[in-house]
Image (cartoon, rainbow, N blue to C red; front, side, top):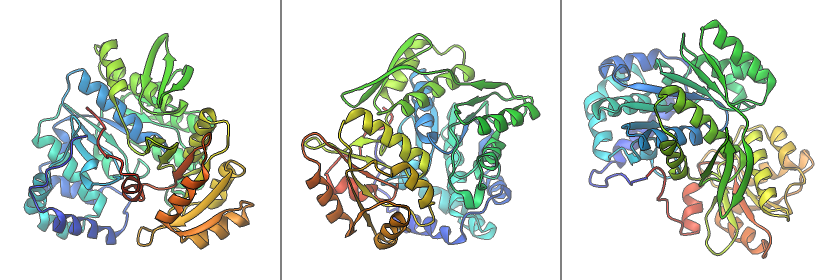
Length: 425
């Protein structure tokens, strides 16, 4: 992606924006609706595709946006969280929102934000929609932040709703069972609006289908991905007798791409095969089993829940015969017991570490929790030291996987002097 303009001193404004996090996460639409009214209800001025799910939302959104851009649409993309720069959350045709526009939004609506007591996410959502409207996007591809039914983005009346695979995550807010979580995610389904679904869990599938029927929403289940393989850090797959390749590793990413293909076909039946093929081929999504070294087999993945960690390790196993070395961090509050079932016996050596001030488990706490679940690990409190130790252990035919959080991206990329460049074209 193109980098944001640096001409505006944006840091004081970003500090104020991130300061809104002190208000916490408020599930519900009241504040968002009030703030959007102050902004002129910008979300009513563009078409949209709305995406919920536990895993694959960002990748699917990126594939969709890239295809639509290739087909000639002016496309807004709203995702979260970011890896390095706040601006990553909001883009149009692959160009990140400029600092000047963020500053303009706050200059114009600061009083209303304070009066309404809008949270960080509510404010960021309003900013995204305001920016898309002001720049006359044809369509916005919008990922939910948390859940669906009560997520700030659920003010949209989309052309298409999309639900990616559902698993156990954010159980404290969304429910402790797949059924409960699926119902929250299915809250984005709108009356008579097609819902595209990628789902292997039968319980989740049943709940989503039930909600679709309640809303008379056409229910479209993604077809099966065939003949998947990985070569030179690209995945190749066959879907409905057409061959495709993507710049992301793993069967799960091929399935995300297939869901994107079905979505754009539902959104615009006139989109041709050339636009679809080029769109998914050119799409990139940072921090998803991303090889970050030209010299060594070192990967970074933001996977942080049982399902995403599981598919990441399955892909690693398909690439390397020898078990990987792992450097693991984890956000405080994540269910270590569930995650332990996915990582047990999957690493030759597992190093646990942390970075203070990011809401991560302290390394000693993570080590002890894993031990209670039958997993031995080596604790190295200093993150950069942990990465260096992991690299020293990989050898010629093994890889290093650094994983567990979005919040460590800056440190990872800096350590390996790896460019945070690409994304959409």
